[in-house]
Image 1 (cartoon, rainbow, N blue to C red):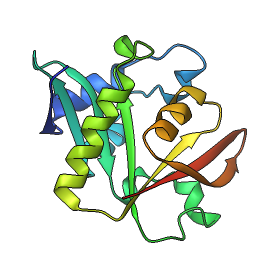
Image 2: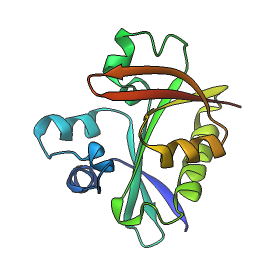
Image 3: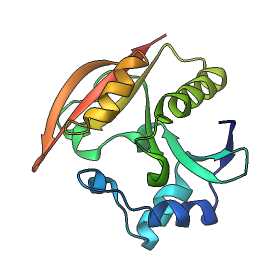
Image 4: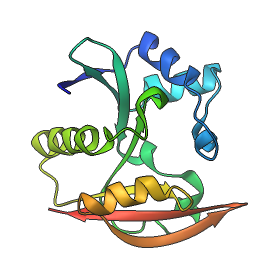
Length: 157
């Protein structure tokens, strides 16, 4: 799979907001509202396209990638860049996670030359945690928001 990063556009954002994941990943489903659209367009979100120019995923880097509640409980006390990623549900669970996230990590490292990178994941998402661990992330901080438990994971370069 050949991938390329593009700036987020309204068209890409609207596509992302229509994605529907199977349970238990439906936790990540969104609705197209002006607020959710603005979130994708006004923060450093990027679209990831394949060789056929199809939207296969996205990522965001910076404080917008943090779970807001985590800030209030000190989960982000270390000063480092955060990332959030999302993949088109039509291709999840098919072995594309490793090349997809490896591509994003390479792009980020080339662009930002970071010492470390942090990602936050819902604790139930064992598939993502396995991927992040495989790519060098270590579990750091756990916190809960209502019924959802989260884990921050850090990759040091």
